Image 1 (cartoon, helix red, strand yellow):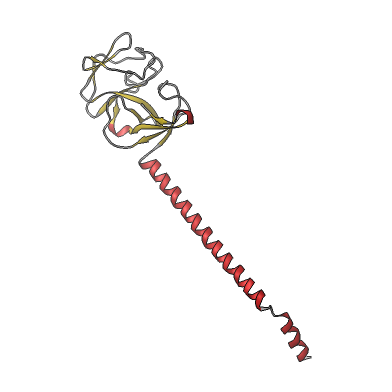
Image 2: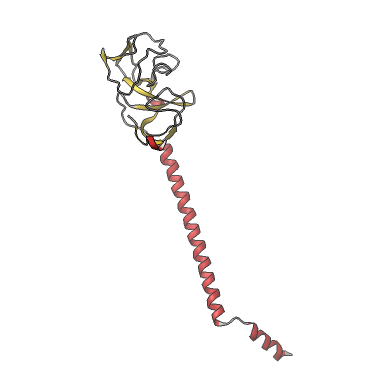
Amino acid sequence: MTRAKKRISLQDRPTRQQMVQLAGELRYRQRFAHALRNTVFTLITVAAVAVLVAVLLLPVLHIYGESMAPSLTEGNVVISVKGGKFETGDVIAFYYNNKILVKRVIAQAGDWVDIGEDGTVYVNHVPIDEPYLTEKAFGECNIDLPYQVPESRAFVMGDHRSVSLDSRNTSIGCVAEEQIVGKIVFRVWPLPDFGIVK
């Protein structure tokens, strides 16, 4: 009976070829698990870096409304750059009542702004060149003109002057430096309009 058991156990043992095949399968599974862990770790790292860059350096914004038409229209997706000095004509995003608004810088601290009845904008008594406009309008203006821009603030206006609510109205007023999210530099959507925002 003991010999029979020994014979059966010798027959049940895997062959050398089966052992080699099993070892190969185990190595493959270990390599696959290692590669999968590395891939997941890399994807999480890339996603975290992308979120940090998007939040801290290059916020991505979705445009709502038509106050910046035709330069930016509803549904556009744009990238802004944080920091830096803003110049007259730059398009900026800023916080207002827990929302982000997008307007164009018209004048800066200390500048005098005046607006003619036909919508022509004067900064320091000089009409500014506005090639981005398709129409001029006086708009919803309830400030006393000429108006001097306060310290550490920017006077902003939308490109669609007849509908834009902006620094011409006391409900928005001039934009403080700490409100500014960044300068809008690039449109990424829709694809036919992909490019630099002017």
